[in-house]
Length: 381
Image: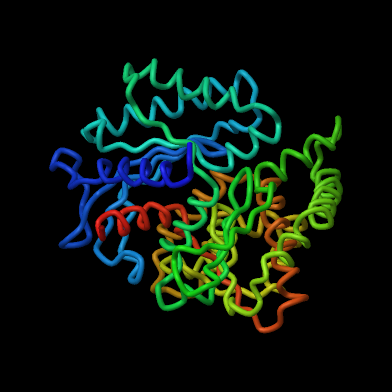
């Protein structure tokens, strides 16, 4: 499908996909003038369901509120029969929850397959697995006309930037989204939102962890995993990361380097649990490097109990912090956290060593960025 046609198709799909929730859903809306969108995304690590309230001027003010955010870890990019069926059950189960439990009409639910899955499938010649999943999903929910879009990496990256980065920093920020199966991002080099310089790597949190685990053989201990992870990341750095960062040419335009994706949320949450209400956290390269060492040498120090016990600010809601830390550990185990943080460090290192004076940010709510951009652009037409 041509790029422009795909963009139009996705915009139309989204236009049909947001509406005011009926009272039957019992969600408490935050904004006076807002719309609600429900979506399911098949990602590399699993299936995500989001119900999001989006206020006006979402791009410039960050006016979006996650009403419900759920996921099922299925590791689809392993491309095995068990993970295929787990993913199918996951997408069908979440779809059923939206339609039956939350009473959202099917035409208001948007479904897609992420660019990370697309890239990994193409790399391994497994595109047929995506087609089979889509066909099986349609058959199981008895909706042969349902649109399940396989999103294009350029469009996903461009709209993520529009949705995540505030308008005031749009043209001086390099956004890098570290997903499960790949890394993508970029910046606007010419002072407009049409021209987008794409940055992408074939490595993500889960694909990096998988590559290290495959090298471990019969020794699945954390010591051997760390050794194999070092080798995987070194090869990725030398063969791909250094070139991609240099080729991006971002230095003259980008004062800020912002990271989004699951690992960015996890690292920000575990490093600074006291900043639970901050959707964006500023970090230094040295801080993240020390955190990586902590994950390997003292993993118990980032447990739910340890982090909440060490909170000194008595005004903080410790229960809320504990719930968020628990969510991190439900999504990422120690090895995945090490892999994702290691990949983050390898990318940061290139900016740290080559481009002086860059400010690094970790974005926690990046998963809704492209959604808010879809809505903002569609409503603005």
